[in-house]
Length: 206
Image 1 (spheres, rainbow, N blue to C red):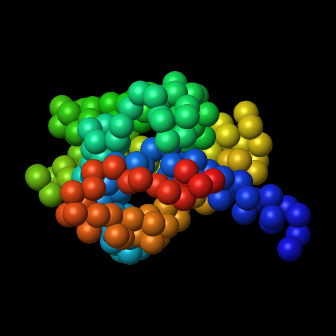
Image 2 (cartoon, helix red, strand yellow):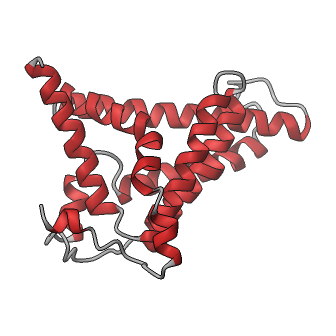
């Protein structure tokens, strides 16, 4: 296997490993990520024939469930499992840490109000007709937000860290729905058994 491909796969594996062990210890969070992943896969399919609807599914179902898990259920503070502080995890996070997520989600929340009071988005688009038109334009606006936030982070990582880091993170984000289904498909059963925190023996043994 060429060394460049080996380096890429290793970087991708490292980013996935750190994301899992640092930010997905709660079984509730894992279960919500499973729901998020499945709805993202639906959105991927819808994207080919209705991008606006795909964005609505992605933001209102996939992102709401995903970020609810992070904000409400994932443990914060000192991480005894990995023996690192929350500040350390936030500092080394390759993608969107909690601070960056909060900024992105703030823009997401403001977009509907902006579109409601300014249907033409200050002359950038034609105003939508009725409720259906509003939701269609909102979906496209949220799609643009997602693509922009994604592209800017990839560009930032390529410049500030390395193209390898940026491309690996891009690949991770695009394939996360598939990976999360494999990783967390048993989490609902564990949650039903009353297991709120994943003991993660694979992390302890590493």
